[in-house]
Amino acid sequence: MVANAGCDTQHQVGVPLYHHFRDIPISYFKCASCGRIHASSLDALNQIWTFTSWGRPFKLSSNIFTDPDYIPVQVECGWGFSSILTKSGDVFLWWPFSGHLETIIRQKNDELDREGGKKAIATPDGTIPCVTWSCSEDPVRLPSIPQLPSLREDDEEQSPTQLVKIAGLDGHIIGLTNRGHVLIYRSLETASTAEHGRWHYVRFHMDVKKAMPDCHYRLSYSSRNLVSSTKCSRLFLALVWNLRRTCKLPM
Image (cartoon, rainbow, N blue to C red; front, side, top):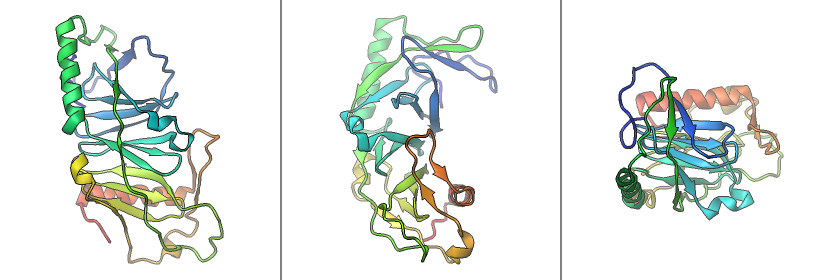
């Protein structure tokens, strides 16, 4: 994440900086993700924050997330976008550096600059007193995933197939379902290009039973984290790492 608008850029590389949110009741962030020059996080109150600079994070305020089905469970950044995976398995995106949202952020930074006294200068103990603001903007909802084949003959669960994990790349999102399917959504460079994308099921040339013999996900919303099999989690993370490193997208 860059240190540009609203912050003091004089800081030693490799030394951690701590952000202090003024008058904001946040006990902790339960997940965070970084893009090319921004980051987003989800706090304990399920509030969604985006950092385009060290000192001026904004809260994404949308009535969408007041729906019980759309409770955020994961935040994930791609190269130039941020995204939220919800309890229902839906994915929502926003682009801080393009389109209408970029204009809102730029205008807000200009406004704070004119007000004065809103620079986030690090204190001697390395804490940055953040100047926060709220952005009322509805994110873009991606289409639902397509009907997918069964990966296990003994899969008798009646719950619907849905996304339970996502990972962001450069203009792409990879998703993992509760049945072990891996999907990819392209054309996420901007909100306009996202309209032309769709979910593609990633088919592997492998014996799924041998590769993922116990790959089974279930959701437990009463606990803090998703309950999952360790083997399937490692396979998904290995896949994401390989795609990010090589940009090879098996279909």
